[in-house]
View 1 (cartoon, helix red, strand yellow):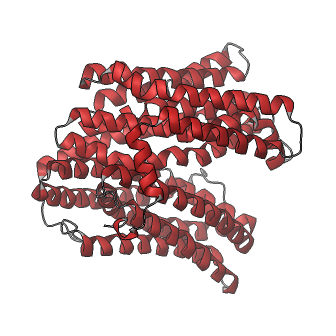
View 2: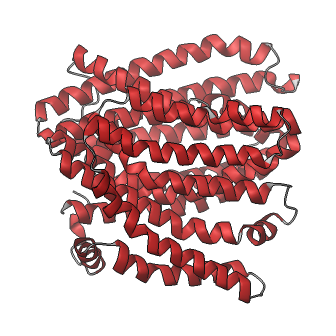
Length: 509
């Protein structure tokens, strides 16, 4: 299967996976809440949240391993790929063990200092849950290089299958909780850990059978590669930490000035944004291995061309969702929440617009990862993102209204989006005119179509659940515009071939 077809197939696989898992996870959460009760469910969420704080570290490690594997695949260096995977696996094991030791050492601080407010009668049980989830975290760390291998191999379909089975297993196993008369909280923690083990077995086992570079025990160790991966992972963790820090830090800033009520509005905005962003993430996950491979072959022009495709398609996929949502946000929140917290609507609108603007040059961030020189990029771009916090704090300190924090949030996101273009021009030779012609210009007409159609529909149509009609009509009008104005001839040809494709055995290779 050629690269263009694979991108579309992988994107479809990820979107289907995400939709299924959202439904499965929402239903599972309801069953778990009913089986455990509010108190035990709250304990699990609280203790699990302490462990999950470092989830972004796992994602950063996956990105690091995937980048180096894809780069070597592009160079067709089979020996280098084996050495890189083995070294990466050893790095994940060592880093995972260090985290386990850190969490074990932190256990007295977490449970005996009063940081977590847990009833004394359930403190011992919460402590047991803590250790069980530490095991789950370690398993996730060891699984990460195998997941990175499948992404580098562009076998997104198999990963999607495993992720859907993960959701099905979780839903099926939580029903067992109703049959347990003893402490169900421990049983649920064991279920979560057992599913982590399933993911490891599914990826490691199939990888061992499918790919010769995949080894269950590290056989090759390369200190140079270890240092290279550690440096890359370190700056990737810094970048991801800045983004996570901004998200969580904003909640703290708002809480300090306005109390916990305002946090409900911000929390809703984060939920809505998180649900929408997977749309754009699917295309990025599908095309990033090809960007890395193109850089590995030394074809910088092809690498930037694929990065431009990632930016354009990520933006368009998100635009057809975000623009109608932003326009109809008041009605949607009223239908969803009934009692809408103050500022929830405007927070959702600003955060969604900021996320959409970020997609316009997101492919250049992937391109920078492919090049491998991420220190300066991390310091310039992601430090700018985290600077949103002190600026927002200063605005509120000077008596500006709460909406000023959203002006800061959106303004800094626009700044980061713009900075990526000259940064890649001067560090990697990006052609600004080519980027403008192939990314910015093609998306203008679809955006205008969405804006005009949403405006007209909301101005002249008044009906119950109008937002459904607005979304369907605006998207229906925009898709033909995207087809003829935003897609090139080759891109339209590939889409047609995928739609008419009859040989499905090529999907999983």
